[in-house]
Length: 261
Image (tube, rainbow, N blue to C red):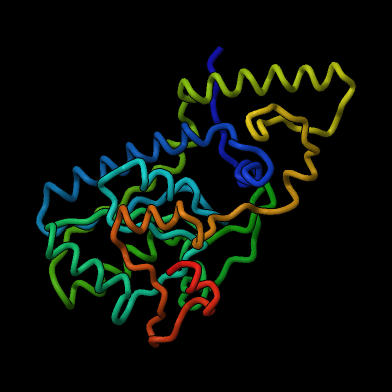
């Protein structure tokens, strides 16, 4: 029987207490295929700009790791790192610069990024889905239209938009996740036979442990923009860090800026 991976908002919370969550490797691998497709598309046209929207309503782990796994991404936008469009150091300026240099560019966008801008320009949605998650406005379509409107005035671009969300959700797990899920299942059975209940299992410091479900779901794990992994992404893409907003004021407090620098 094949193992299929379902990525939910609570799965990434496991990263705070365990070494790795199931399905993550599969999601990143499939996301990279979408990025590769976008890169092929934009390379085949003049001034091509590709946008790939990936899962990540509260955190940008999938977008960040898929960007690092691919060498074709020029900019990665996630909920934890605020960005702005207009002005010096903004996204529009970077797009124009990169397209003039390379003739094309690829943007990876987590679905939760830029929601503060959407709520200003569109009527916010207060409804929730069946899992209790707040329904987000579609940042992919919003950003696509914003870029089209801006560059209609500035320069001619060919914009391609890819949303592989449900393709990623429905993909069979890869070899790494197949093995990992087998180990999780065996550990879960051992825990149940030992009399435990209301728990999940996962590796903590490379040892499989029993963890209360309440501990796993009590908070959302997020990408820390002061950590080395995000610094590695910035070095890989050479994108702006968006440390200043469109008014020229600093987006982070001085302590955070010192850590980033």
